[in-house]
Image (cartoon, rainbow over all chains, first blue to last red):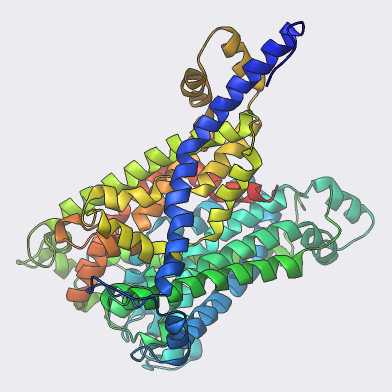
Length: 315
Length: 291
């Protein structure tokens, strides 16, 4: 850009800013390159591959159009159909994230009622401990607990008043799904409690004081103040929890390797792994990946759209 | 909310009961892991379960208290691959957390403190990658890794996790509140732009750096899927793979199984109890995403 000579000071400021801007851009270049190569390119590549009949063992492949998509939606893929995986994933997601959100919200509200900050700190830390363990460790522990002679059966028998009944935690197809949900719930409950506590702590206590002075009960306070003001947090946390559940892999994989049937817990990620890596059907696996991508995108959008309110809360 | 000192109400008792039940649910499996790693399979599956490891276990001639752990370390083929796998896990997790901090802080700094053309586009594009799940791109990444001959190598295991979009976001949010006056003062003193980043911005971001590095360390320590794809040789595998393999082949030896689980968790427990502040903070910062 050409500038008039007489505006020298201005010109100088301008060039310094420009120089700085150049540096700012330079700082972001490594990340731009990284995300271009390791996020945008692969998803594009996945789509291209999903249109081919590519296999791991073959050197050549052809474009087959949408044949892979037709295949995964209509055929049973050697006994492990995509429709079954979608069902397994959605069941797992719903069965895990709904109880998780509800209970972690209740726990967070309860923790805020405790009289001492130290007590709250202790509970937060204790609830968070399972999240520190890796998913395979969590699955390993629970696999032993779910053994026919294990602690979970002993506990269930005590509660249900039965004796010596095996509840088939890892055998029955419904129980197996419940087991995976339980493991996931156990591992992440503390994490979501903390997210809710952060949200709750940002609600100014003066609002509650004012409501109490006006004669509102705690019950009313919860429904009329806490819940509406917590809406942004709830939306955020539930989207996060949902996306995380849709991507579950380790628990199911570990259970399967430990001898549980694959079909009831054959979540999409596991099906992608088995189809693409174990069976070498790269084209089909990529088609499944694209389906997974759109399911996640769609559900996140749906949740945002249905929970977005016109009036944003200010406090 | 209600902090009136004095009488204990019924609702308070109910709250405590609820919290304590959940506490038991959360802690019992962890406690189980600890005690079961000092038991033999017979005792672990005894009905009713006895929480105290039996004396027999320690006094029997063919065992010591560490028998389970020795089995755990020896692994399936007595080849002590455990240490190699532990080392791999540490290498991968540490490298990823270092590079995440460096790249994310550099990019976050650029986005937070500089005005340049296309800045918003860069920011939005990076945020958009959060919607691309790793699970959906792992097959193409695997194909590329294979093409470059990086299967069974550290670079192959590390490269896809050099930096995370969330890390960039977190650094940017933190640095937005960083006073620009410091930066200008340094500029007046003639410090170069890169030196400003390295000597002023980086040392002053320790809390967010700690949170971020712990988060990415934990994610990689927990990662099973990607190593399953790229680490196929025994000596390149990581700890989660070791545990999976071990559980497949030592199904009946629950004691050794729990010993492996305990050994694999020790590094995380040490980190957690010494730096719990940053762990809990790491969970809490997700919150800041909303605004």
